[in-house]
Structure formats: structure tokens, C-alpha cells
Length: 536
Image (tube, rainbow, N blue to C red; front, side, top):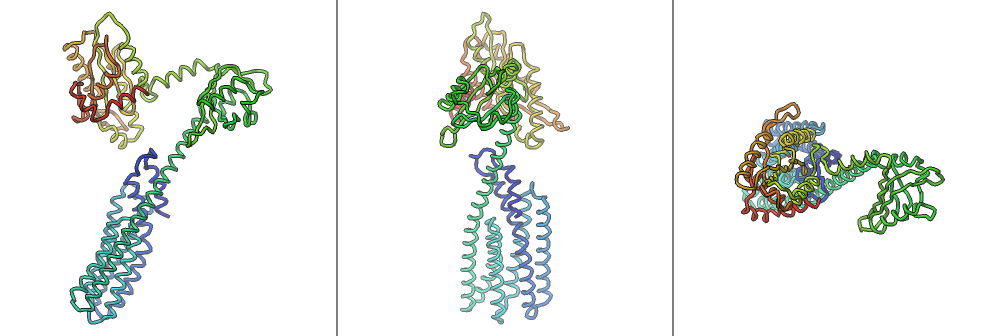
């Protein structure tokens, strides 16, 4: 089915976090796909019914008027089928609203023609023909109740355009029979509207559920693929074991480290008495306490030569927090120096920009606040956020967004002194620590402001992204402090609040922290954000 096929595409743009609400765009896309999928049968049926209607009306009304009505309806129906064909060919993915409006125009246009037929071809002197016309109109409206209910306003409009003119004609005739017929049509109209709204709710919930399921399936598959990629290509050995300490899986790197075969590992019982007891203790600790550790020489069963290694064991829980087994990361100590350098780099530096990350920055700031120095210095901590980064990232792609972050990092590094540090916190947020060999006074604050204004002008401007020149501006907030006596947590809070104020004032702003900003900090719950930043 077409709309189920569209769901596969919808899932790609669905919520990344399973706790986030479904996007209205996702639901709209699925509803539009369902409308176009259900278009062919009602349009063809409508044309067939229109042909029979024209045949019935031909002798009692002007053939020219009947033919004009039929040809107009046929032309609209043909256009609807043509647009449906284009939609099926995959041209609709980026213009859901436009395709909905096109569909709505065709549907409401057809409804208007059927409603006009009830007025133009009403024959009070021929009860049989009038009854036939009423039955046909009610049938067409009933058909639209099911096919158009995915979009409530469209279904309501379609039904109303067909039945309201017919009911009005009956009521305006002012005869007992015509009034009764008008009331019957109005009752039928109310029934169809109620049914349409009820169907809409059912279809809406059904589509929302399907979109959610497809999105979550895609997320689970993505997580599985990512983990398997890490598992298969990790430079460290990885093994899985169940709650009895039996190995259930391992990667190729572990086999290379230990020099064994997969068959020799699968089913190996690490808790047996014949197994290495230090390894067994690490496994038991992970199953009982959540983590375990082993460092030493490990011998495969029957092997004469052991392998010096370090193994970190971690327990794995299921949804109800019940321990179901664990996994181990195994490091070959022959590569220890290289691995430790790599791990340090991963732990303290941002992989994209090569800048220090938040952990190293916070440790540097904490060290500065604790150390004693004979020279008086003024420190400045500046938080930086790129304006419109999400729009740039969405417009030019993630590769261009990453390229922009790298270029910003290079410009930021070019402005650093020997004792300064810049770091990437997360996303498009950066932070900088700058020190001035000057006592903490008004003069130092003027120097800091001038320095940061220069930095803001260097960071702002045009960047070469995807063969285009894109203008980017930063919002910066900073705080000045006495480097000889400071509280690193308070400094980070102040700089973050200042940046929050800079963003609130508009783009390309430089804002210095003021004590009166505390109220803003409390309202925005920013202390929790900074506390989380420090904890991480």
C-alpha cells in the first residue's frame, strides 16, 4: 500500500528520541499518502455514477448543461488522477502541504459540482428523478466519508458541499414532502459528518501508532547497527557472557588478542573451578555489583603461552533491572601505550574539532582556582553559541555543519594565548578561558571586553561551506574574575547566564555577566544545566 510505503520514508524523519512526541509533519505525510492511495477507486466510481446521472438527466434537462456538467467533472477527475500518478512516482516527499492542497482543490471542486447538480437539475415535477438525484448525492457523500476522513476538514467540506445545497433546495420548495425530504437530507448530513469525524479519530490514532512503530523500529535497528559496527570494528576485544558466566559471543579482535578460535570461546565457562579464578572473580563482581576487573596473564584452555591483558567487566540488566549477564572489554597490554594515548584523547578532546572537551576544560578551570600564584591575574570565561546553526546544518547538511564547527574552532584557537584554553562543550557551544596578567579591576574588564569584541568580529563573518559563502554570527556571554580566588562552578554559571542573555537580546551579541541576571538564571533553571555540565 502506498501510504505504508511512505511510512518507511517518514520513519527516517521521525523522532530521534523515543520519548519525544510524534511530529505533525510525519502524521500529515502519512495522511496525505493515504488520501492519494484511496483516490483511484472513488474517482473512477464517481465518473461512472456521473455518466449514469447524465443519462438520467439528459431527457429532462438541457443536454448542453448536462454535458457541460459531466465534462467539467470529468476534467477535474482526470486532473486528480494525473496528480495522483505524479505523487506515486515519488515527487511528493518534500512538499506534503502542497500535495494536500492540490488534492483538496480537486476533491472540493468535485463536491461543488455534485452540489451544483442538486440545484441545477432539481426537478420538482418529476419525483422519481428527484429521488434518484438525492440518492446519488447521498451515495457520493457517503463515499467521501470514508475516503476523505484522514483529513477532517476535507471530509467535512466534501460532504457539506454536496448535501447542503440539496437540502436547501428541498426546504425552499416549502411543500410538506419537500420539507420532509430536506430534513431527511440534513439528518443524513449530520450522520455523515459524525461518521467522518469518528473515522478521522480512528484513522489518526492508527496512523500515529504506525508512524510511532516504524520510527521506533528504525531507531532500534539503527542502535543495533551502530552497536554491531562498534562491536565488529572495535580496536579492543569484546565478549558477552550470560548470568552463569558462559561466553555467548565475542568479536574478532578478541580472537586476535588471545590467538584462539571462535569455537574455543563459545560456551567457555568463566566461573568454573578450572578457569582462572581472578577472571572468575571479575565476572562475579560484574554480575553481583555491576562491574569487575582483571589484570594479568590469561591462558586459553590447553595453551602453554598466555597473553598479558586487562579486562573490564560490566553487568547488563534487562528492563526490570534484573541482571541477565554482562560484557567485557579486553585490552592487550602490548598495545597499552598506544591505547592509553588514544583513550586519553577520546576522553579529553573533541573528536570533530580536536579542541579540549568540557571535562578537560573544567579540570583546567578547577586547577586554576586551586593553584596559588605570586602574580595577580584576571581571568575571563566566555561561552559561545553559533546563531542559526541548526538552520545552516539542516540547509547545507551535517557535513557542512561539521565543517563549520571545525572552522570556528580554528579561528578560536588562533586567538588563544599560551595560558588560554578553548573547548567545545556540545553541539555548537564553545567555551574559552583567557588570562590577563593584570589585577582584577576596571582596567582588566576593559581589556577583556576589547579582546572579546575582537574575537567576536573574527568569529563572525563568512565561512566557505559547500562551495558557498555563508554568513555566521556568534552570541557570546562572559564573566571576569580574580584568578587567585575563584569558584569554578560559579564562574561557569555566570558565563552561561551571560550567554543566555546574549541569545535573548538577539543575534551577534556580546554580553557580560551582571549580578542582576540571577533572576533570569532562576527562571530559566540554568543552574541545573551548568551542574549537569560539571557532573559530566
